[in-house]
Figure 1 (cartoon, rainbow, N blue to C red):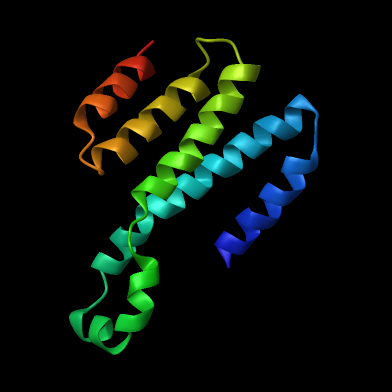
Figure 2: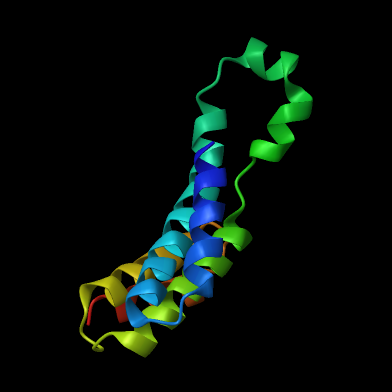
Length: 119
């Protein structure tokens, strides 16, 4: 249900050309990235018997770190375009990207994004 809500919000804000709409779109991209990274954590907490019963369903709930990386990258691009370089939302986007990259074993790229999040 929440993913549908985010998709509706994305389609609404993507049509807007005002900076306030674009910043809200960046927030939606960021939340979508969060959701894609957290699906695996949810699945990992399910009891093993439930996993066996719903194994066909579980594959659709696996972590999607590349997808999260794409969403975080979109959020970062909008924020860098519209906000001052020192804004905390830009730093947050760099940090989110670092986590998504680290979970894909892209350590050097992750470190670079982490270091950018500190400025």
